[in-house]
Image (tube, rainbow, N blue to C red; front, side, top):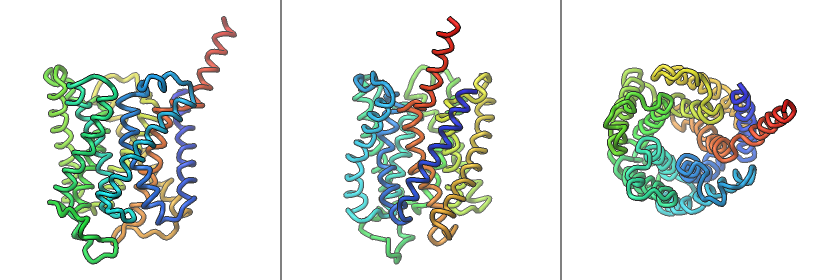
Length: 361
């Protein structure tokens, strides 16, 4: 219950801080440079939190809070300062953040989730177990695969004639950009669901247990299958708009999942060990968080940037919600939960327990 209460308090503070940051800037700057800057740091943030687990570099791992959290947050920002300009110059053409640059930046985050969450750093980890090699390898593989697939899959010709369209920056890939981005974001939502279920049923297969590469392949097929079914039902059977579906569905679920896993420290229904039962229960809770956060953030948008239009042609409200939840709030959530370990709430709790133990002793 202490973990849950700490998570609720911390989430409330982080949401308030995030909305406060957004409120400092006009909508044009927030939806471009601010969101791009935050998102450029996320792959490095994932490496520090999920790959290194704040145990490497060793000198930083030994620091107490809040210095440890500040140090690892600084490393993530450093990663953004390295890769951000490279993306801006190559994909963005050195212009004010274009749709191509924003979508590619999102795609690098998706790619990192696949490399870390599904393939669990394989085959990089098969070459060397040194954390520096794995961390840098994950970044190289994530950015490299994102670059190759972005140029192969994304087509922005639907923007032709619009002032924001620069034909020279359009990779003119196989699929309409919103379509492929919506599907890929769906895969991340499914990855989060699989994590809630401890990757049942793949994790129970003997081949997957004995070989990381086999696990990655089978997990990929499972994620792709579930994602395809969800995406087909939403966009073909229910005829939902790609962007509206993406934001109201997968984006919001991902945000809810990180509240459940990170801010609640995965403590909800921890007494239930059977999968996929626990995963299904947690998924329902994540949907509840998703709905609640949509209500809160949409209400905030009416205050911060009123009269945003929903749906075509510009998806102003949907993009505001997506940027507010995942571009700005999400990295703050990960930094606070993984780097700061919910400091100062967790530290206060530990100090109180120590005091009680000493008193009773």
